[in-house]
Image (cartoon, rainbow, N blue to C red; front, side, top):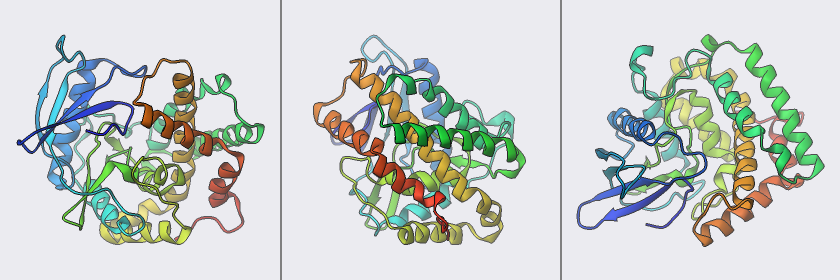
Length: 316
């Protein structure tokens, strides 16, 4: 199948209605067996929501497939069109987040942000990526913005305790390109590689930020603030007032945090690509390089940050 991401190859198993997901040996690949177990658990636990592919089987690592593979249901449909399909994506995330939350001992092998809190857990990911910042060339304004946002993320993690952050099964990597529209009405989340128990607000941010809606090769859109706000309102209506109320305070901070997480991931990605340690399909590599150039442009950085730095910040 068409190469779209950096971590997996996908093969359609002709005539079966199934897809083979084969992890790549990328520079950030961890233990193959642990990764496979986590991805299998993600598909299995998300399946009751009815908005992800059905899990079929896992193949353990072998000499032919050193990182193993998963077999999942093939989702037949089209790529999302934005903003038209945002309500379907909002409904899908609401259904995923509404799954019963298991007790802490039953959450493994999926990552669990319940102890330290989703903000601190996300900040830890950002901190690991930040180590690459000194190795990439950036405009001074862009570098200063990233450092300012990191300081703010530290402040946010210090002042918001874990108990104040609602927890759910979340997709984490919920940019619109990871959805397929089935039957013209259903948005199916097909990439569950980073599923964890974390903050629903992070999923909502990742579905609508500029760095997400312009990332995918085949899904390209620049949302207005009104379109993004409408997406949030639709989601909050889907989950109902009881679940929506605790989320309110975290919606805008999550947008700042996810943008910083994406940018620091992009910093590491640029370092890996420029060093030759990451080999990608040429068409995908050209697209990614163009996206990174845009993301790091000071004008783009200023435009995205205007959501929370201008006197009238992003609001519902």
